[in-house]
Length: 464
Ligand SMILES: Nc1ncnc2c1ncn2[C@@H]1O[C@H](COP(=O)(O)OP(=O)(O)OP(=O)(O)O)[C@@H](O)[C@H]1O
Ligand SMILES: [Mg+2]
Image (cartoon, rainbow, N blue to C red; front, side, top):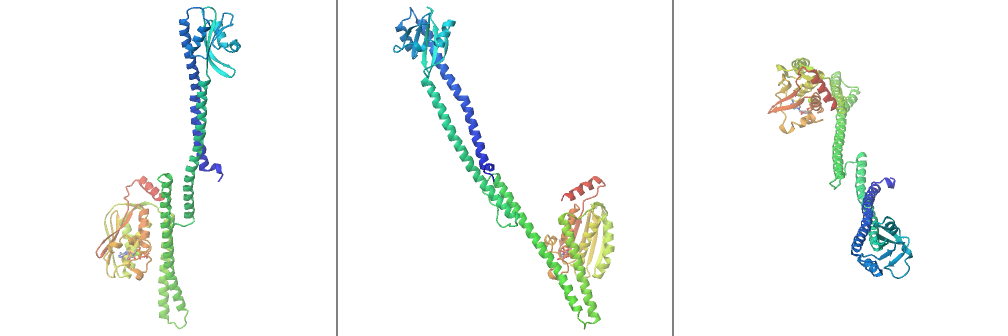
């Protein structure tokens, strides 16, 4: 990264600009005002004294009077000019009075015959001056040096400059230091993000700060944990799916080898072919289920919501599955109570019903009854079978779960797909089990005859 693009450089620069700006404001607000006030104060004092001296003046002013006036007015010098603008008396007795001969303040007072004041620089030294015309046509000039006063302003000025430079240096240092610490934390997060992107979820993302970066790190860590879970689930899914696929494929392969032997009688051969057909059916059901699941996961499963009559669904299912039930030595009963029209995808409702009836036929002892019930807005499949232990009631809906272990012919995907479909249609699939009895209940939203309701529902499903 370019060094001037770093957070450190930017923060230092920003702090330096703020400090410099603040100093400039202080400078502009303070230095000229201080100068102005000090000079004006000195002039005001001189003018006040001059007025008092003027009032106390009794006769023609003399050298003594001028000396007194210089002392009284707290002026460095008092000079008396006569009407012709010649120096008549000067409190500075040594040297000539030529330096004040053309004094502009005295000249102004003489010309206007009124008090005049101003700042005059003589031989590099600034003076506050007040000139007052006297009653004999002359002018009295009072001059007080401003050197000491203005030196104070210079002290303030130089202190401000030094304080400013130190503050600027500190601002740059503090800004750089703070930003470097900050940048180090950000860089640590960046490395963590790269690690996660590379599929390494093992190392937690830690930042002990309680500020926004700390919160960002916590969010990163939540993301890491979730991705790790998803990754575990994905691996488990692939492992389970491959295992489930391998079993029937190996079995078919084994039968094929056996069939290649010449000394097989026709009866054994037919038995093997039957077994192979069964494994192929299992394989093709598994492939269909896996495809359904991947479509559900990828959002590619089309669900067409429409009005569905559950009594019709129950009758159709009973008709379709009664032969299978008979083959499996079960009685299949269809019961239709008062039903309400519901919202669903008829084909998917039939698919859920098939999976539930299939379970009730497969996972129960022969000669028991399976009941298909349509009541209200629910489709129920009840059996008298061994029931499902309370501790497994949620587990049966998980993918690849089989409670009856290796005895089972299924792959444990039926209920997982059924529940997912129920939820995609805006409904629920739940298990009501009492000792020795099982009932799976599919509940769907009621169709109110309002097409807008259907559209809303569809929208919601699309958004999942
Ligand atoms: N009606 C039931 N009575 C007793 N146990 C059941 C019943 N329905 C499901 N189960 C148990 O729940 C497990 C999961 O059922 P699920 O339908 O998901 O899988 P499966 O039937 O084993 O295989 P698949 O449906 O994929 O062919 C079953 O293996 C079984 O142990
Ligand atoms: Mg099943």
